[in-house]
Length: 307
Length: 199
Image 1: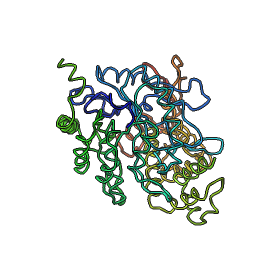
Image 2 (image 1 turned 45 degrees about the vertical axis):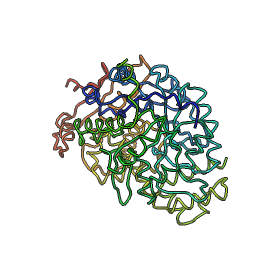
Image 3 (image 1 turned 60 degrees about the vertical axis):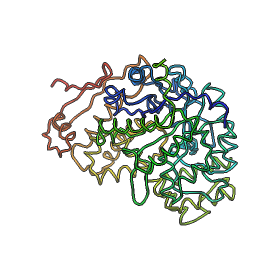
Image 4 (image 1 turned 120 degrees about the horizontal axis):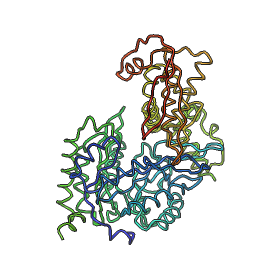
């Protein structure tokens, strides 16, 4: 287990920020312990060679500061594309460093995937997170990049297990073996997305509890939960509402077994908020908090208040 | 760097259905470039896997949702059939290059204007002016360095713009009266403001 994961603060239950959730965030701040944010939606990357390259959404950032109050704001990036072979997206790291100056977050994360690829003199952005082959060659390519992220930011860096719709020939490791080796060899922590685990298990007819049994859960710093939907015979990580019961079962399995867990984040796309509604969202967050309190210590900010 | 070539071809399998079909039909001969035997085997395998189709569906769905989110009235003025046709052609010519889709939405408006200029049969008589108006709105909202003020936008309408845009927003088929006029848009206090030019 990476040594830097043992002092993770216990944040409790977080909500993933979406602009459509703003009215909820302003009125139901009592329902979550921290805010997770995809920081990329609060800046615009004008592309390599432009100056300035990044335009920050100052109004959006001010809103976050205001609704978060004393609660942590934890960035969960989508732009690092850490698995991209032809270049490392260091501009993204510059931005995350700036955010750390602003928000002093206790950890940050991105996806164990890639979305940028060479395309002639230009670059493609697939817009979806594409899977990396589960082999030592991939780990060798990731290790110096994770090391660079860890050098530049003084807080744990997590990578999130990806959804994939196909395996590739010649893969050397199972999901659990790959994630364990990733953490052991690079020193990153794991953002364990249980809905992604459920998607993969359902689509590939595997046993998610077997994966969890093989996974070193001491590496897990954050858990993501969400709802999904069926589409043409596939189950999609659509972030489309409350947790399905199988994801609750996975969460109940993990909560007592993840000693370094800092938080459980509920993710939902803003477009589904209208359908789900504020009351139902509050109910889901309350249920998550009840589960947290059953198996995890009291969140750090509540301990401080009690003291 | 064969890993970079592998990913470039992999990404093309996701975004370019013609390339995917070529790889499915022709096998390894469709895969140019510096690749290891294992990388070639993996590309052939995933090109034929049904999982590639759902990956492509997700890619298309995400990209289309960005376009529809930024150009809702243009998409309504196009209608479902013409939208699907024009988007497919636009994507064929313009691969996705950024996570930030405002520039792509502006480029799509320019593409539609060029298509109309070339003689494309417009599905509705007001498509050009609605697309120009939404394009101008995006230009006004384009993120800019602090202190830079976007230039005023002037859009020429052939039809009465207020009932036309209102009907499209309600999801109704407009029956706009002809009324040649200009709308002028500016960006003030974080908001786009439009007004009709004086006659």
